[in-house]
Length: 218
Ligand code: BG6
Ligand code: MG
Image (cartoon, rainbow, N blue to C red; front, side, top):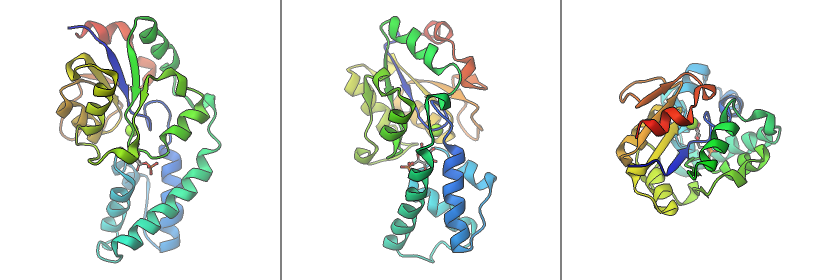
């Protein structure tokens, strides 16, 4: 078996947007008079926008406080704050080691894709000026089942024309690692707080990404 594709998560793997997600949720939580801190923010990594808001409500014993429509409106409000904040992103915000790693993979004929459940993924990639490095970028709006479901990783493999067993998924969140494993792919975990499944390759940061090490795992 030979490595054919690398499928990257975006937030926390290609760039660190967690701080902007944090600031945007914090602004909304402050307005609503809810408690929100970095520890709660950790639980939101890899979690969809609406499910993130539900976790914040749960932590504030406010699960039944809003209707579904109200929840959607408030989560969209957070997204407006977030969208404004990410406009500050530049290519300097690409995490260390990512560009040489992708360049090496591509020069070895390996395809690259992005499997992010963020509806802001295209804009973030555009601001980082790396959209052209990917052969396929999943559209989060079309994903029916968010991570830990394997759907988004399987869609990337299918769109690239490869079997899941020919692909490697790279993630920073536990939900993402579960998604990669459920898809039947080899997983690389970047600074993942492990709560259930252990990634196949455990790294502390993106600067440790090593194309040879990963291809030799095949
Ligand atoms: C994930 C982030 O990549 O995208 C989550 O890790 C975020 O924190 C999710 O909630 C959805 O993103 P967005 O941009 O569509 O609200
Ligand atoms: Mg992530």
